[in-house]
Length: 230
Picture 1: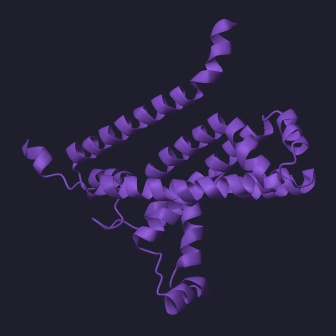
Picture 2 (picture 1 turned 90 degrees about the vertical axis):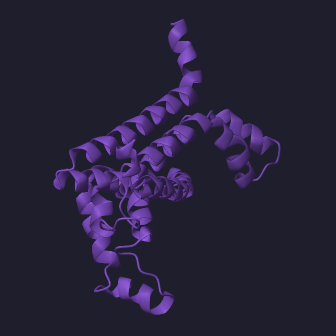
């Protein structure tokens, strides 16, 4: 009980708040990009797909360094945001969100694109036959048909966002009550020799991760019926 009373719960709330916000951004941006990429020629698609997937294969610290170079107040864009819009990204919660969204985006984009590619083309032809516009077909036919894949991408993006460390620590830093997420807290407590506290936050992440994986299994459970039959 004494141990629990000593816990500052702000890293958990910051992680959850960051995860939700970053996932919303990744969700809409991922679906938008997946739709646009699907319409490109194969050569153009390959180049843009590689660019959009880069945060997935780059070390998070590299992505964080690039973001830091973009939003640093010593750089043109960072100083422009501060001087003209009073927006500061480095060492702020906004930095947590941007870092998490950038790292989580490829998971949403790749899952959305894979889901779109598996939609039965006959459903689209049927919508066109009924006189539906391309936008109506996309939102009323394609999105529902690709629902399980999009749902999996959303949940995976959330899991990646709340567990992000490298890019977040580079861009947002480690400010207790402001930018310290659970992952950053684990590293900070371990470095300080507070292994009990680090273990506690590690257990919190494990529990959250378990429920995320269980939710993914429930969402994609429909696709397992054929596997059981075979």
